[in-house]
Image 1 (tube, one colour):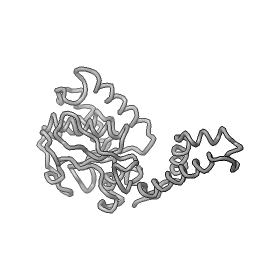
Image 2 (spheres, one colour):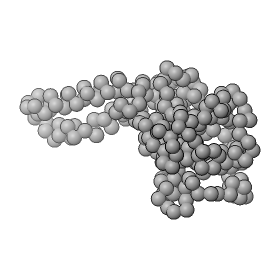
Image 3 (cartoon, rainbow, N blue to C red):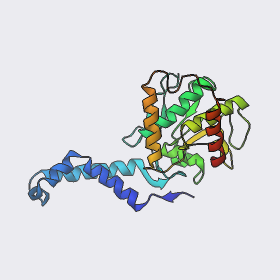
Image 4 (cartoon, rainbow, N blue to C red):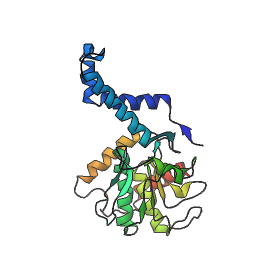
Length: 247
């Protein structure tokens, strides 16, 4: 069932907006003007009104299955933007920026290099809240925290879309992400095209994994695009352990 964003999260978002504006800091340093004297209070009120209008236009106040807020639009001054996927012919994928982007890009890139080369249109990211089913993993697409890779090839409700060696790679990718990503193929109603963030906002594990991947991206011989032995005993052990905990 879709749930409302908590009051604590809402207040945190408002605080971020207010403290992130230069006008806000100016107003705090000018108490006389804040009382109603001079032009600064008007500018401050206009900025607050502009941000409130932006929130009404972009934000929903509702959480997707994994606890992240769904957004009404993408590429419109929210948290979700079209991002390029280096090394692939994809036009770009709409997803939540920062740590979520880093981790999901890693999943997409490894799929491209190690399972099958992706083509334009093969990956679906953000979808409008009204186009997803609420209360299930599919809703995570509307918060920009999930992607579907070739949804037409791996239809929802069906299992067995991957060959055994391809599934080994999927398991290895998930193990590299240390449990912050879940595969829809493990859900009660499977969607083998779906990969989504499986931790709530502000979870330190996501930041840790994203930092690891960013470090790999700048280290020769590491990260996506580098051949790995998926059957190496330690890697298989990690993959099996995670699969057991997520199934």
